[in-house]
Every structure is written in C-alpha cells, then in structure tokens.
Length: 328
Image 1 (cartoon, rainbow, N blue to C red):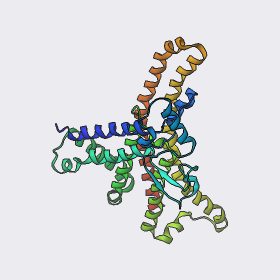
Image 2: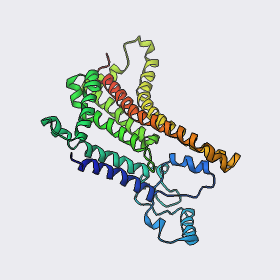
Image 3: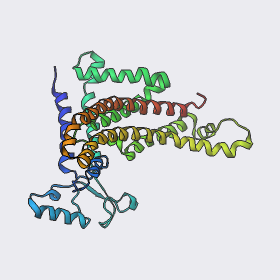
Image 4: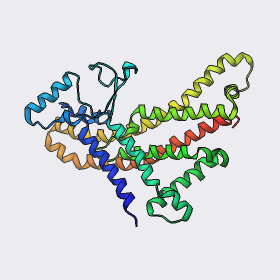
C-alpha cells in the first residue's frame, strides 16, 4: 500500500494545527467562560516577533503594551487603504488592512487536502488500479455524480457543472471535519466563510441562468405568468426569493456548525460552573459525565459534518438547476 499520500495528508492536518496553535494571538482572559467560548471567534495570526523570546514579566508587559497601543505584529498583513473601514483588522493603526487568521489556515489546508486525496483518483478511474485512498474518494465522487448531480440536472448539464459541485462538497466537508480536531478552528463556523460559499452559488445561479436562457429571458422568466395587476407585488417577492436562497445556505451551514461546537463547549463549561459554585472536588466528580457527553456530541458532529456538506451541495444543485429551467 502506498502510504505517501496518507502521510502527506496527515502532515497537512498536523501542520495546520501547529500553525494555528503556535501563531494565534493569545489574550489573558480572567473569566473562564469567556476564554472557553472565544474559541468560536476567528483569531489573527501574529508573527514570532509578537511572541518573542523574552520570558517572565518583561515579555508579558511588552506583549500587553503592543496590543494596548493597537500595534500587534501580524504574521501576514496586506495594506488595503481602498477597503471600507469595516474590514480594518486593527482600527488603531493607520490604513485599512487584511490579516491572516486561523480560519484561513484551515481553508488552505482543506484545499491542499483535496489535491492530495484526489491526486490518484483519475488513474484509478482509468485503469482500476490505485490505493485505498483513491478508491475511497473515487467512490465519493461517483456517488455525488450518479446520485446527486445527474438525477437533478441530467447528464449533459451535470457533466459541465460536476467539477464545481465536487469541489464545493469536499471543500465544505474537509473544513467541517478539520474543525473537530483538537487545536483546530472550524472555518464553516464563521458566517463570512459560509456567505462566501453561498455567493458563489448565487453567481452560478444568475450567470448560468442568463447563459442558458439569455440575459433578457432569465429575468423575464424569474416572475411567473400572473395578471399585470400583481406584477408590482410579484417582482419584489421574486427578487427577494432570489436573495433568500443563498441566505438560507449561509445560515444553515453556519448555524449547524456553530451550534454543535457551542453544545460541546457548554458541556465543558459545566466543569467551570461546578468548580465555581460547589468547589473543585465537585468538578472532578462530575468530569467523567461531562466529558462523556462532550465526546458523544463530537461523534454526532462527525456525522453532521458530512451531512451538512451533502445538504449544502444538494441545495446548490437544486437552486442552480431551477435557475436554468424555471419551469421545473
């Protein structure tokens, strides 16, 4: 068995977790509950200069001074004076800028995992020879093609859009699964990430619909045949419906991934609650039950990670197909 690609995939995951843990900006938070739930918030990556080699109180003072002055040493920062102030990573500094966060680390990791895991799939589909990883992901790809894309869109149209749906499914799936690893971050628990994915589907709907039906025909068929008196009501409703579809994709994926993590963190937070209210011995006594429930939820989240990738992709297929053929 060829172990090169599995080892490379494992190295990518461990490397992403190391970068996130090593370069994520850590802040001293007195309240344990705030510190616990801060793991759901994207954190910028700071350069080694921000961590420094100092030790003791001097390092803590210098680090606190840098952040108090609003001048952290970001690992990657891109000046963008043209961008709106709402995108400013650090309003205390002059100029708007984008910075690299822990979420981008795992998004990049998900993209690289797609290349690694699928590098042997074409050869396996041509020759029938390949390792277990190639067989696994070839089966996934064929299932998506034969059970999701072709039945909804037909062979001709589905074949053209299959690369997009395959990429969408596995990108979401890998981001969901990466978020279950200790020390990682769930990119799909950020509404900005899920909104970006939903916007790509919206672009495919509108642009693809105008290509298939024509620029005028698409907008003409957007509103069903109704009496002229109802057009002032139907036109805003149909335009609103066009926006609601990607909004539903955004909120569904974001809420499911965020909610699952909040349940796990809530169980873990019971330990702090017991320690604060009844003492440390009570926390130790209840820890097996609390940890057991947290592990149980994590097992369910593993299923949810795959399910939400399926749901997001399937809804995208249905929305795009409907924009191509409004009569259906």
